[in-house]
Image: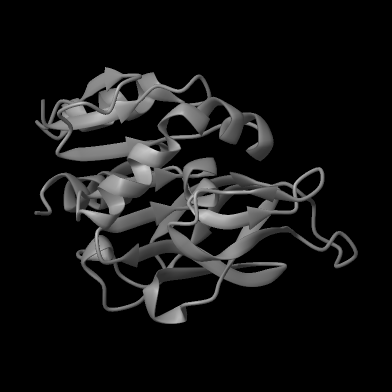
Length: 197
């Protein structure tokens, strides 16, 4: 097995699978991590429920991250990679990235959740190779990540606050937006991950 799309009951699996297939890099959907040389962790839903579903795999995911296996988290998947979340109370995450997940302020005159297309402010990072400032991607989220290692932020976005839209820390990559729903820009980002070593 090579690239694995992790099925833990909380992901938008089919659209990610189709996007990867369109790039000529098919992925295997599985609830087992055995044999994977790359892992995509999608996510839609609540942090606590997702962590509960991931609990049997959490140790393996942490070990794979330590061993240098490329791992990509998408949307809720990015949030799960952090140390904790404030969604509906305090909950511990996988701890692959330093920082926490917090709610957008609701008193700034903009609607929450942040839903729709927003421009990226990419940094010099392999995850965003081929993406230029102002390229738009598709977001749906009510919380955002506060990353304690700003050098790992691959792209920023602005909605109510400036927040990390993408992370690349060694072999752990993540996007708060949905690359599979973000047209050619999203496909470029998925291709960068799928072709990384």
